[in-house]
Image 1: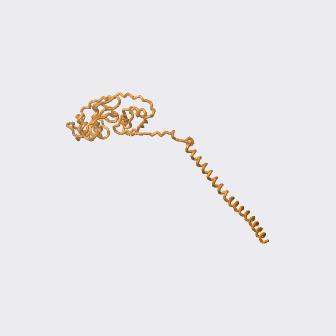
Image 2 (image 1 turned 45 degrees about the vertical axis):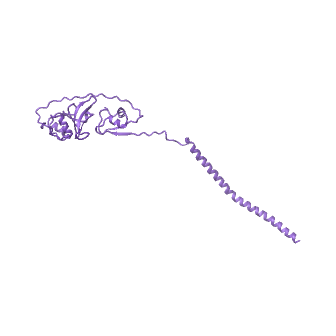
Image 3 (image 1 turned 90 degrees about the vertical axis):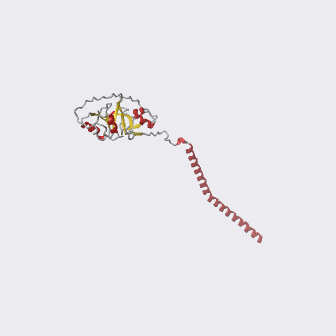
Length: 250
């Protein structure tokens, strides 16, 4: 009788215990499932994002490109004293005619003044050809001025090695009292020596504090001059410049 009671108690206990254990496991499983689902969903989202990024990188057409935009560099050159279109063109490795064609403000390629701003054309730039004007030299008629009191022209009273000394040697008829080169035209005019703006071979040209001797007047509106102390002290050199660059003593 006692064994039967004990057996019944054990069977009842087992029956009670098994449902409790099952409920606990189900509860634990239910508690884990939402977290597991969230992790899986998060991984899926990250995977889709990574695929999207890789797709964007692998498709260059999906990004707008500015590679078709061309950047043009404008080169400006300010003319300095003594420069010509040829010397400027040599600096940039192009033909002087292209600079003339580009800069329509130039009337004559042989006449450019210091301070003029030029635009240097690009190598592949299409330019309209311009005709080079033909300029005839204007020869001034110089009248002889007589009975004019002038300073002595005997010898050379100017300082050796300078432009005034050189020009006096080329024009020994000019007086020794013209002072520095800066005052030559004004002092010559005040003494009745003919002066003017027209170039003549054999005339003296003055620009600023420098004088030159005119060797020739050219058909293109330029003059070829010889001078001393332009490229260096006591050095005689020649150059061709615009005729209107100088004022003249005849």
